[in-house]
Image (cartoon, rainbow, N blue to C red; front, side, top):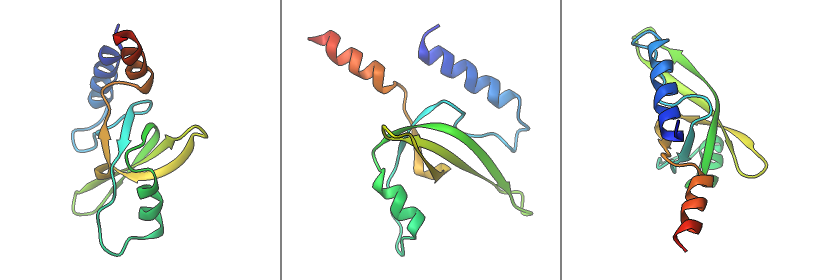
Length: 112
């Protein structure tokens, strides 16, 4: 099973195990890219997230906050860097990575 097939299977499984209104966009172990926070009045947390903008990390854990209005917000713990520092990132500050860093390195070397 290829890494993409494993991702699709595990994503599908995670989605089916959650009620419709509580489905995370990302799952544990999935690789994601940190997007820069583009807001005025940047807080300490947002400043720290911006320091990792463009970095690929791995979802370590996640949880959600459900408001009385029915809105659900996911918050992710993402391991980044060689030291595997864990940072807290909101769902809209992430984007999926389809290939792992190891796979992209292998494909670069196989072309030469």
